[in-house]
Amino acid sequence: MSHLALERVRFAHPGGRTVLEDADFTAERGSFTVLRGPSGAGKSTLLRLLCRLEEPQAGRVLLDGADIRAMAPAALRRRVAYLQQTPVVVAGSVRDNLLLPFSFKANAGLPRPDDARLRQGLAGLSAADVPLEQEAATLSVGQRQRLCLARALLTGPEALLLDEPTSALDPDSAAAVLAAAEDICLDRGVSVVLVSHTEFTPRRVTPQNLHLEAGRLAWTPA
Amino acid sequence: MDAGVIAITPWRLALALAFSLVAGGCSLWLKLGLGRDILVGTVRTVAQLFLMGWVLGVVFAADSLWLVLPLFLVMAGAAAHTARGRVREKAVAFAWPMYGAMTAVYLLVTITVTGAIVHAEPWWKPQYFLPIGGMVLGNSMNSVALALDRLFSDLHARAAEVEMRLCLGADAAEASADVVRAAVRAGMIPSINSMMAVGLVSLPGMMTGQILGGSDPSAAIRYQIVVMLMIVGATALGSSLLTLLIRRRCFGPGDRPLLR
Image (cartoon, helix red, strand yellow):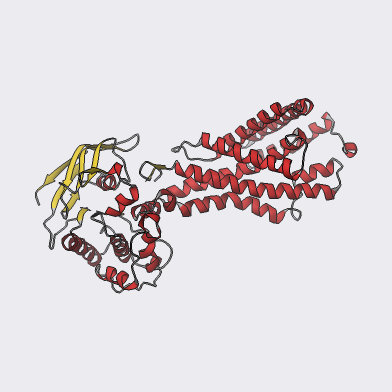
């Protein structure tokens, strides 16, 4: 059974352009998918459909074979983590930001991580040098992106949707984030869908490549 | 009580139109383009107040709950309509919940004041119920419009932050809690500010009216204190309830944000 799937999905923005027309897509558990396509083709929309930030006009979005509309939204989004293109942090320290998910009712049953675990999470993303006490607003974009990724991983998602995570990063930060995404996929068995506008050279994973253009999805050779 | 009121004759009332002419003159002089609005505003002020004076005369004479209550509902509808017009957001339908909530809240506040504080007999006595209800509606209309305008503009401006929280497991209420707080604050601040200035900077309408009508100033200030406190309570209750109610309409099924 596939892990993430779109089944004959049609999506158009309200009163506007059709983004997906009769689209099918499947990703196996622990797979690494790279989604490409021209600017404005709807790559971000596809990711947003997978975590129900958008609702298709027709067709179904499935997680482990079940329609995501039957799941509690918070539970779905804990299983399928979506990382926005521009990292968003709240006022407060790095620690405050990392612990933000644990302030929500739906995550009340999860163990609250201690400082050692928070540092470990940052270190896994080549951000060990970021002090937990530092104001998050003072971090560079690259550090913020890694902070947001670490935060998303703390609740133990089984799928990770990365929306052009390297678009605003310098080459070193971009390489660190992409390497981390590969490690998360291979070491934790997390399914990754990466939207990338630039060339992605895999280090460890063998990605499946998907192309979206004019409402059509198509697999492409590596 | 009204022995001291100096009646304004029609000619002297017409003289007051000179102020509108001054405003129109400023508009012409500085090319403000407000001439038409000043003219329409002047005509509406005169016509609406004459109409209201006539209606109040009829309602006071009839002294019937079945005239007082419908008139209050019409006033509440006009307040909701005006507040709706001041909010620019068109993507979320909120006119009916707004009308329903504004009517319910302000009816409750007005009944509390006339029945429990003023001890009007009966509680709907038109000479008390309609002016007090009108003051609640007039002030709260502004606060509701401010709160909702802020709610919608912040949900647009802070859409990425709201989505970030949703993606981390927040529900719609948790994801928009900061936005809601800012909106309710925006609605409440003007009435809190007016509490700070009352008696120092301004002599408010009800008190002025009573003093002009010959009332003892010490009785007039008691009414004004009740009115000020009533307005703060009504704006807090109205802005909070309306903001929470309409916030729900800004999210679709699955806590999906509708404003971006």
